[in-house]
Length: 368
Image (tube, one colour):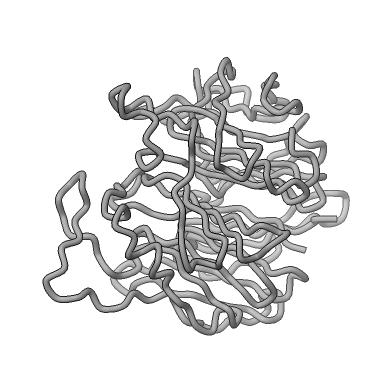
């Protein structure tokens, strides 16, 4: 049973536990005052990783070997020196792309002892020693089309979704904002751009289907059925049945198909959850009514779930990594930019508010 949550916020990392009387309470706090952009609990729950964004002091990694009782600074992903005279500019703004880690956006486990890390600017790092050291995926960073990647919500492109195939840890798929979906079958030695069927409505019609131009907000994979992927895209919801090679767009999704977060049930590939919003410049719930949407038939139908969510006008936005389904599929949790945190014990049918007073929430993870 997943009775513990790790919640990364703009001002620290919080452990939320289900205590006596089935109440969820804040049990532990770490790094108060520091933004925690990504968190990872390795299988078993003893080894934890937290990524901190410390402004002038840069990006730092912290690691715990005892479930968070003690922490120590670990190695951070580091870029090589930029070759002198090499031109590497953001195609939208024409400014130099920094060859330094601006933000650790996501952390995911691979094979035992292996961790993958997606950062801004758009690069992928791999550790094979539990985070003691990191290696840049040069094949992806040196890919000529990488220079066409553009910033989405941030100034520069970034890798926010990392899917490691549970059948084969050499097979890894990543989502780039903005730069499409890429996959490797040799642990990053070579990469292929995939994504037929995706559509970017913000481009002229003749260019809308270009896989390189797609702004995937978040991609998740069903662990029990790894070929089933779900994507919350900038202009819609897409689903793939072949590991991301071909996608189909889902239409008529109430109240909106825009958002950032998506979660999939770990054993039922047809069940997925989203937190919709009004798109582009607005970015708050449609009609200020905070809801979660769920499909249980592969996207044919969607339910709007709001039992236990605010009845008054609400303006919460849920970021890419702030919606999570537990590994056993029994619980859901999501946190918002207002610092509100909700948990569902019944797969989204109803919600209970855990806190309205946390700092803005960046990521939510169930831990064993």
